[in-house]
Length: 319
Image (cartoon, rainbow, N blue to C red; front, top):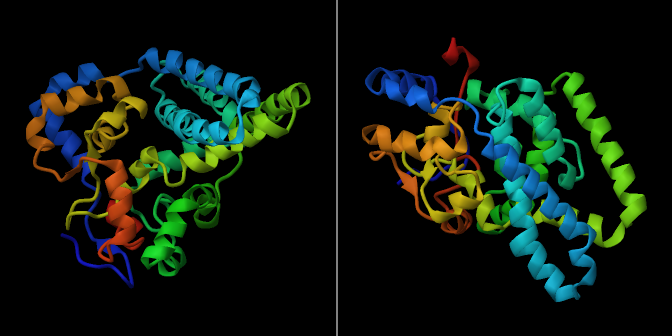
């Protein structure tokens, strides 16, 4: 059980564990290298998810009464949107195609139902998260000090979790501003054109409202959103990254295999379970979660877990 964190984060003087563990595992189990490389199923599933979500926004939700609309948006729409978040996460690692440009175009396509252009900026920030995990001022996955200080009680943590999507959207720009590059500009132009075509043809009301609500719910109190808290909040002293091996991985591109993913970001979602099977001695002794929903509940209700329950380090630790 970790100690209660009220005033500051955990500070580590060591590098994050994944580079060293990757080296050790590859020395012992070199066959894991055969798992590296793209999987075309990622592209196929992504195209299906985008098509399904846009069909729902364009046709299905316009024929629903308000209660069916709400239930459909929460259980179906938000689940699909969260799957698209995670598809973009996978594509960020160039795991759909061998070359970077096709992966970027697929991520931009996957971005369409999310309304706001974010895929290419996410790619930059997520790469920083992997390379500089926990580094103060670089890893924007970690809450700011003021954020952690403000949302410290159960009610405040509920508000934070409920509106979590906004923190993930705006926190990166507050912590580390990136230069706008070619692919960010392409992402913005493509998304503006897509919305400029969609809105006049199908209208603002049901379709855009549905897509925006899906975005909000997907990053709010939703079972799949439990992975945001599960992945790196400290649930055991000294452990920095956590996996989840439950059934919701089937809806979430196996993002629950998070230790495995950070150890081997070149392994696509479909092969991540094989990493654990090949090297069980490196993963079965680590604390893991059984339920994303229960993680959300425990995080909100227990005073032991706060937004300070994250491991941080100075940049010089990684030198």
